[in-house]
Image 1 (cartoon, rainbow, N blue to C red):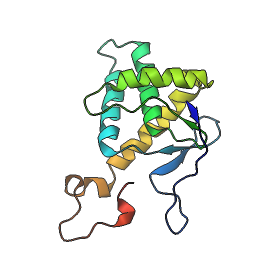
Image 2 (cartoon, rainbow, N blue to C red):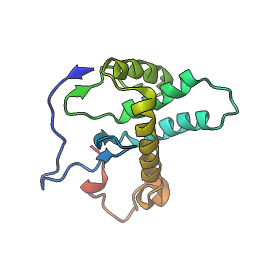
Image 3 (cartoon, rainbow, N blue to C red):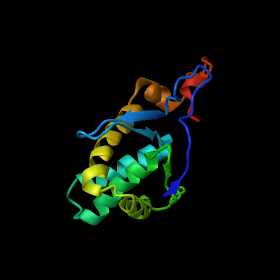
Length: 155
């Protein structure tokens, strides 16, 4: 992780950009995250789903890497930024998660104590974003006769 000082991106009216949101999990202080793009959300939720079935015999190592990948993909902190780049299309989210897990460990952020509760809340948020009426209308495409609002596009 690198130490930097940055502020939450805001709209001209002062509101925080809607892709940034707070998560409250299991008695921990609320913290900010950034919603990954839709492709990344789908890939991450698919990755988590492979560990929730229990039928494939995947290890704890893989599942903790998947949780770290989910949290890492959405990580936003005003002072701590991840050094590990997000995987490009077709690259491994598990490998990314393994590297991110080590970065979090170095900062004293534990897998079971921090990443698992955050990942649970992030997975719910990501699932609700994908299932919102705006996301499912016309298979995710804006209506043809309607202009795209700048409020509904991600940065």
